[in-house]
Image (tube, rainbow, N blue to C red; front, side):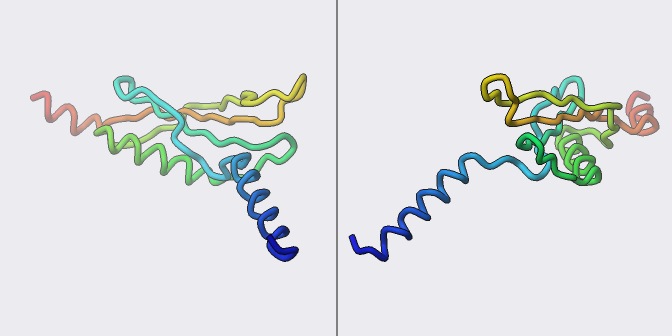
Length: 115
């Protein structure tokens, strides 16, 4: 191993190690209940580095999941939950923010099917 390759190898190892510690900078589907038509959308961020994310992106992601389940729309449920995802002693060093959406069906369409 030459003196030139050692810094390259060190940089590559460091980059790989840091990639394992990354957090989502966008909304992701984090759970839900198909039977109840409930979708959970979340993102994570390190302490003191809360990102500003698109509310529209969250709504579109929820609507897409509802559509896959056979619903027409996704209505946001008021509020959000902020929980600690990872404790470092007595400090939380990773936070998770979760919002819920209720999948809905077009009432006029459903009533036509019932006839």
